[in-house]
Length: 307
Image (cartoon, rainbow, N blue to C red; front, side):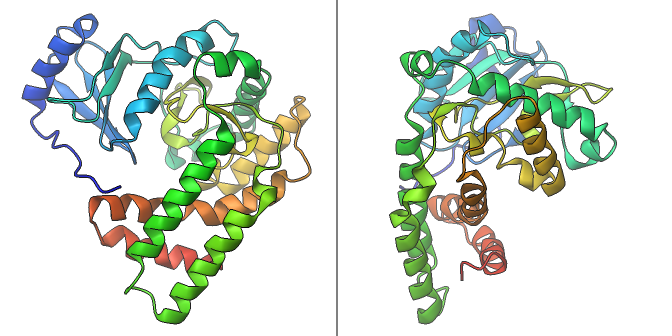
């Protein structure tokens, strides 16, 4: 699927539209950009609200999922604060791909520079405790509030990344490398080991920008549940590799120490995820008609042995 990201540069007009669409957040006042991910931009208002506005069409369903799943999660005893959404923005008009808004949580993002000054051991254990609490939630209740089947979601991403990368890299790679890429994808799609796990309730995207810590580097909040699912537990560890590989290993070890269970294929799936994750930039760049991120992703694919 190809799409054109919305233009959210006029923050004044956007504030007016948000105040009308989300009365709980009014008056919105001035907006400031918090960051941009693959699927949304995050904006903060003077009134202390955060708005995540979709920049790709597939995010609409995920915002709706958060709208139903977050109130359920709020009733569970999770060891960190989570968003409490107060408005769901329908797609159309000033919000072509919709959005979601909630009061801002306290804390700051766990960027690499923040982690470097933190008590890493204590923080690792706190993140592990959050994962243990999530993974012990009843999967039938998760499904009842709209959490999707993680195997189906993973398969969708495999197919999307395969299609986009083969198309985007045709003419960029030589014929030998392009054929090697196709063979790699054929093997990945046929590999049953990547779906051989006991499903649990997962956040799905625990990484630096979604982890909030206070000034003492204590875990205080977890953001962005749009990828939550009943799926593979590796999805609550894999993003930590981009923050710090050693820190990811610490969280995994603490998870086991706190009673979390790793199945026999856990390590294999983590290693495959390292390769698979490199295609995210290609998928996004292909969808937006960009070239720069594709060139950077190619270097990573070669380093990981895909090409």
